[in-house]
Image (tube, helix red, strand yellow):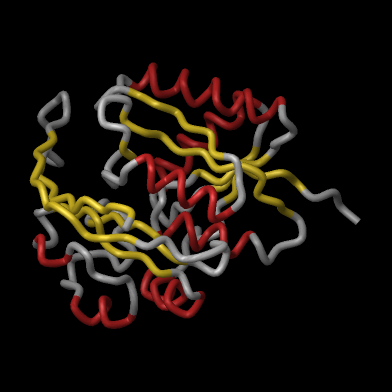
Length: 234
């Protein structure tokens, strides 16, 4: 019998990471032992999701797992990001973690980038959702008992009225045809407040909606605005 590999789950606080974790929990060959998240050091929030660090901490407590946080400045230089992640992964490798899991679905460049990082520290990557149909994944989120709401939308694709929407089949019916059902192209981001692997649901209230604009250093075509909905613990 093969030994069970210790896994760090790259945890965004959203539905894809939650579903990937849920699927891994059913496999005997892997054991998730840590969560890893990158946050903005200025705002103590998860990058792009805008979720407060306190909510992230609450998720980790509900999952009974240690959480490793990598705090970075806004729009960190690639070298800074790479070094910070290298240090975090090296630390995990020294603790016996040999595999890093991700909720990525079909972004090839991102997958290659992650695998290159892992190779440098002698770890391997695991992608439980890779190449799966994204409509079916949304249905699986609902069927698995994972409850997630939208906390961020890219205004090029969705209006702010989608903030707070639950991820389920009804959401699929309301989604414009140019938006990936899982938001894999960055159209929206989510926060999971209940899951079968939480010890109990996280009681939340939906707060202020803010609009922020982000520009790439080169002023490329992805420059756009985002609506964020603040989420608070009750």
